[in-house]
Image (cartoon, rainbow, N blue to C red; front, side):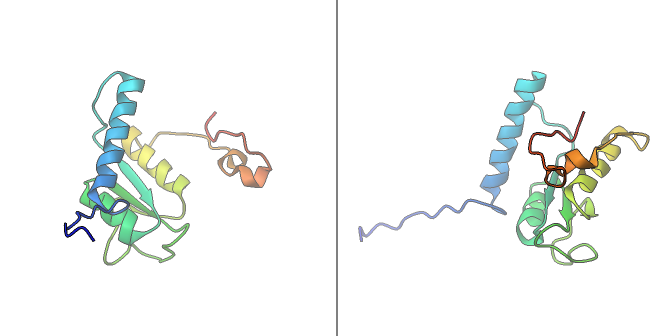
Length: 130
């Protein structure tokens, strides 16, 4: 129409811009919460789609956790885009495993199953962590 080639920019997973933005947001939170602009050594990404979530997290150098709660329903890790940290039945199991890795195997934490999934308890204003 104008004779000028337009530059196309794609956003979303697994595009690098998405992960850079997430990195910037987490860095900002670290500054607000802890007073330092340094991210933890290990960042964990949880996703259910190997072709977008996992490949993007792997490309960005994060620890990736593949969950069987959506797109991915396989048994073992995805053959083409394997999650670097493993495959889990749900997000809670991925988070608990990552916390144990970071804080030690003796890390004990009580999770209220009613509060983890408020749909089952009929409430919307619960926190899983007391």
